[in-house]
Length: 336
Image 1 (cartoon, rainbow, N blue to C red):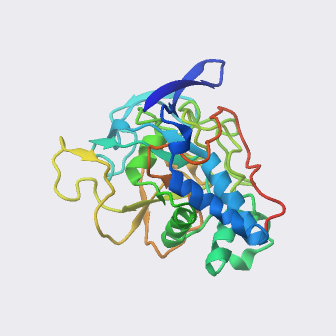
Image 2: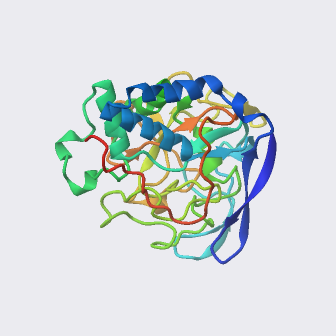
Image 3: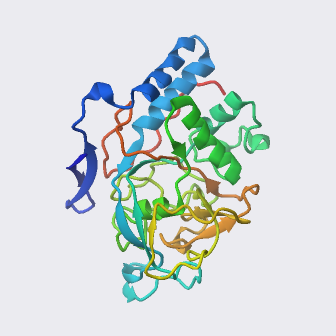
């Protein structure tokens, strides 16, 4: 693989380098089987539900961002920061939590991550296809459950099920991100980043929002993305990850242990969620961890999927921009 630079405009006119894959293998050899699997779905194009699934799959692949693999120090690394009032500081640790202070080296393979959180329209298509109950069905028609808004209040099983379903219909290794993948991406490939915004600052109403009236999510992409092109890694809804919750050194690992593609302990009681929600995004820096039982849906737990491959996708992802990109992804003709 050869990596090429992509210029990403940043606030103030400076240019942030972002790496995206530039492939040297012939296009016709790229993930042929998943490609055929994906477009075999069009055989049922006369079915409006199937047509909507085809459109969702294409959109999901177009909205992927390639995250180049590498190594970083995971955990509360501390360092220079700007607080939510705009005051600069420098701290050995950013948080007072006792479950993120085991700073350890992590090495990850490259992967793709969705630039957006999953919306209700997308999730409703999944539940209909699988014959499952709609999430928050009793609130259908309410403004906070509008099709274009991020799913909130999902259980871990629902979140994992959605990503796995995308894997079923594409033949690609879709999943929830691991906790390490999520932090690596939120911190722009592991940099010392406290806030997962476009410029590592917290500027209310400029690069992060508290939701509509502060109570329910907004359309994904309403605020600028982080330097990798990922929207709402902080604010809007928090996001489930794959790992069971535990201390980072759950198996007695030494501080100098290198963790390669870690996915947490094999079992546990709670699953990890990451990222701040609309009610308190300032409380959730990039290194803070949350947990909840996997069958419990909180008020603000949402979904973001990854594809665990560094190979080209059958549909070319859209270019990364540094601008707000509100979800224009809701298909008005999709079945409800």
